[in-house]
Amino acid sequence: MHAEDIPVLFEHADILGGEVKVLYDLNMEIHSGDFVYLTGKVGSGKTSIVRTIIAENPLGSGHAEVCGYDLGRIRPKDIPFLRRKIGIVFQDFQLLMDRSVEDNLDFVLQATGWKDAAARRDRIDEVLESVGMSSKAHKEPPRLSGGEQQRVAIARALLNAPGLIVADEPTGNLDNDTAEGIMQLLTSINRERGTTVMMVTHNTRFCERWPGRVFHCENESCREITDRKPEEEGTAYAKTGETEAE
Image (tube, rainbow, N blue to C red):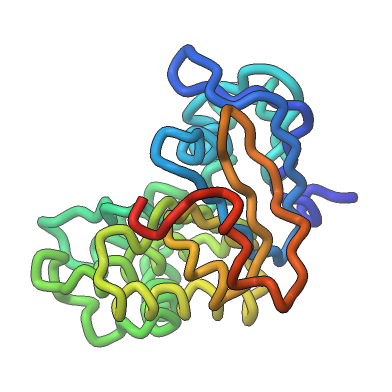
């Protein structure tokens, strides 16, 4: 299969957290159009997987490919090109607070090679409309709510039309109603655009309300939960011991 068919592939991979291996023998094959949850307690290795996917952490051992790049052989000069193929959404938004929403997005487009100002404006208008933030283009992030800031962060992730979005606890700083709105947005992007989404979360209720594939990190391993029947969706985590409060 081509890289666009399997944007994320790990085969017998060991994952590093700093210089220490935190996960052993990871096998993960994510297909184009999948919606994937990555669950587990704090410190179980979820974020280390994300950092490996974006080549922030080196691969410990084994084989891994992301968006056509071999992570075991990727050259430093190729890492920015890999990251242009991935839309990244962070828990703390990571917006530039002294610039307007429009300028935040324009900064990213210029940094990723968009030279035509009119084309940049058109693309900014398009992504802001897709996340319901067209009317807030001229506001600075401190004047927006947390949910609005996260919508801008999702718009930023969509700028270069990535085939893969990686969202690391994107609802962690939001109240329940706002978090639900962000989930609806991410799942609609997945369904309507066919964009692959990998979401790190502690909130296992999301997995029940918006079903997807689930990989659970525990005891230095990460395994897909595959033994659920559809009618058992709401009880899938009983055996893991994880609760929403973790």
